[in-house]
Length: 148
Image (cartoon, rainbow, N blue to C red; front, side, top):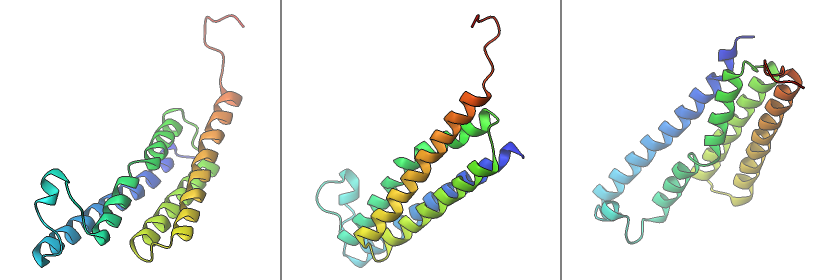
């Protein structure tokens, strides 16, 4: 299996993050032009951002929290040559759940549905980390020159 296959889900996560960035920009500019948001708020982020914009901002910030651990584990999988069908599958599941989380957050914002997607993605991420650790422990060879 090509070790590069684990990298494709990271591009999909980047696309999600960049898409939310563009959406946030569009909504902010539209709100300022329409008068529902004050451009001065964005100078120092003092005061109150309108709720519909706060939700988008919060989602964008969230894409830099747990997903950073996804990027790290994907790069570790690639760097250590531990790419497997199993890990690539779970990486795509993680990305799908993050897309679902964002969709829920930016549409209905139903808290329990959003939490379900968030929690499920977190469990998939934990599974990926645990799988990588197990694979490394099983496949690791002793360091040359170290007496066991």
